[in-house]
Length: 269
Image (cartoon, rainbow, N blue to C red; front, top):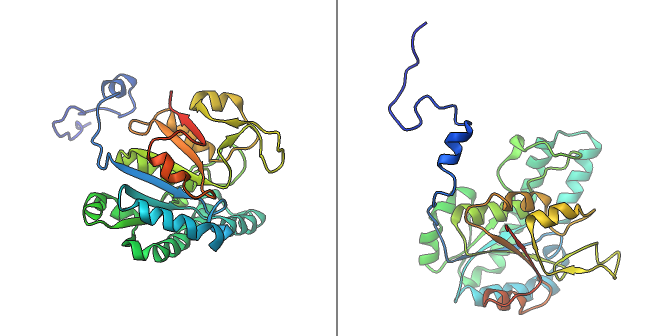
């Protein structure tokens, strides 16, 4: 039997799964492409679906902030995602197909947000444009992108059920991680993460600060963000916390960008 054809490198002959090899590269410093960037995810279900009374004041606030801070606006899907998932689940669609269908909705919301923010020099961008982010920011452009990560038909099978686990919160987090962003802020329709759904139980307690491991150990029935974000946060290299803020209250996003502690902070450790 002939020997394997090899190219000289430090990884020559490696399976790329050997634990000793992986540890060799653990904690190695990574390039932070946009270390001053603030990822601001606008939820579809929590923000956009409420229409003009909620969206327009937020657009004005983000537009003003874009003159002072580096921002990347990331959009969620909302009610239309739930509608297409409802139909797809009823018809027995595979998880990957559900992910493919649902991903189109956050793109529609990105188009609408880009149009609303156009007077602030906004530009709707795509996944392939993320490596151009530093140039866009240098040109004083406010980039807007859909939040659905591009797994599509390759979506991971979920631990429970069939709903795709990587959705727009996860997409915003992964963008923050790969770009080495300063902040990953999720705008919702509640004041933060609660022990229960505050709309169903007004006595639910607000969790202001918690680690990802602590939150997973609580094993809450419901969460205001995707569970996958919490799981990924434990292994992140660049993003060490995710902030959840009420996007229905004008001025809160401004305060968070100024460094005030509001809503909920979920930390890696």
